[in-house]
Length: 352
Image 1 (spheres, rainbow, N blue to C red):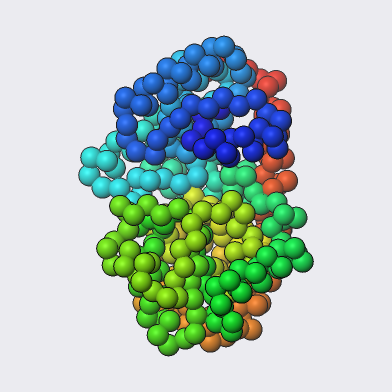
Image 2 (cartoon, rainbow, N blue to C red; image 1 turned 135 degrees about the vertical axis):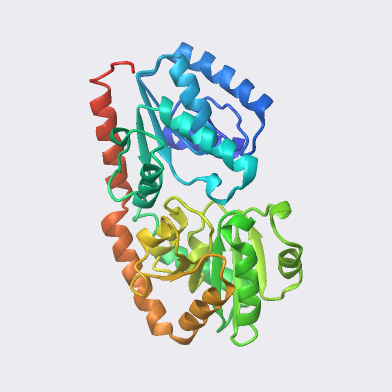
């Protein structure tokens, strides 16, 4: 397994799944020397294990994993596409990322985009043979455990504690969950919230790790100085934070099929999200969420105000979001799809 998890999460994974785990550190950035070391280590590991299937996720793990699996002649080389950094890259970096994607697809024997939008994006550019592409269920890389992500007495108790701690009172709570980086739309969110909060009694929870170099100086100032913005850092269990909130916002520039929209929906929290690949597959505008133009502060403000003005609409959208997630994106649907693929492949092991 190629992993960038920290030791705590790795240990939890081992304890929970009782799985053998081998950690080969990777980076998100272009780091040729580190990547070469990871590739060599992975080749050695695969030669030792001799698996029938190698299944990779994320662009960097996909590239290194597919190269190593091809070198070792692993018969089934599977890659899940869950978003593309190149969609927001430019110049030489974009060219390098495009080549990396094409190499990954060329070496894979099966490619699973986690949304129909991504599959169409790849197909339109002819980056791989059509027969290599396949969607599992309605999309998503892992699906959502709708028994885990649902309102409960325990979660509501924790949510009330959070609201008490931050003196929420009667204020409406917006929440952002994810990496606090430019490409997630954090600059637009903070600008929109600053203006909306001048008219409405509201506050904003930001749940996730901050990558300060990727955030504008103006956003950093709002994060540090605004009395109604609370950056609470990374939390492994986001359910209490979602339950403590009224409206979830994901103003991202690019996505595959965002888990956080599924998590918020399963918790009956209405979402405002960018009208981009992935988000617009989960959300039907006005029914189970609101879609806004990406990178558009005014569009975001209008939707925030709409849900602030209409609490009954918020409630109905939240209920509809739960129904949508439970019917289309349950974890068992995705897992069964992956399991069937594995079963078929382990009975058909021709090396290509």
